[in-house]
Amino acid sequence: MEKRNEVLELSFEFALDIIHYCEELENNKKYVLSHQLLKSGTSIEANGKEAQNAESIMDFVHKLKIAAKEAEETEYWLQLCLKSKTYPSSQKLIDQIGSIKKLLNAIIAATKRKLTN
Image (cartoon, rainbow, N blue to C red; front, side):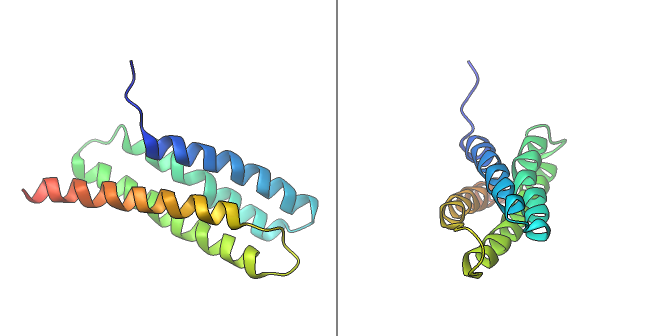
């Protein structure tokens, strides 16, 4: 039985939600932000998946840091959407990305602590 990986599960569900949100943006002709969000929002889990096959612990941390950077970028685009009056609400996605960011940062910090001990 495969061990549960919460960060990958959350980021996969988030990627699916981002795809749906971006489709809604495109239906409203909001192409530029849709494209940016689709790229950054779906790459979080892609980098998390890459980390699962890291060549070393440092490589693992590096790949998760990339995922964390993508999460930060995604949050930025979602905040822009939230504050723009002509965009659909992105609050649910902002809440989701907040949880993913916390989890990624906790994993990165815990892994770094293991390296120094």
